[in-house]
Image (cartoon, rainbow, N blue to C red; front, side, top):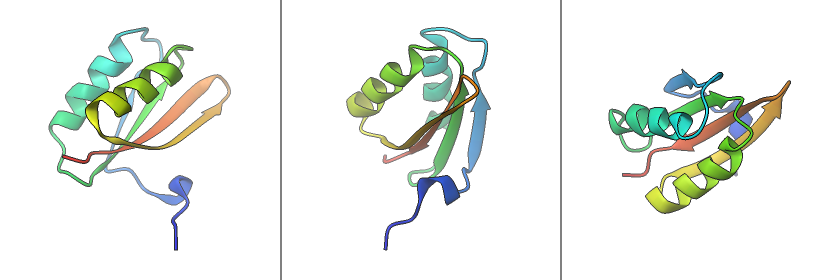
Length: 83
């Protein structure tokens, strides 16, 4: 049975609101580097480019982008570290 990503509790959360490209990706890379494989990271960003940037970054790095949601102009990305 699949688990709804919105019900998963991240191991770490970073707030990148107010930062613009490339800083949300840079901060995500730094945060996930110190995490264990299988851990969940939530990243918040209000940069309109962050949606495309995070999708591309996760594809390039191989980390799983489990969920993307947006509320009041703020994106919430849920990433599982794979390696």
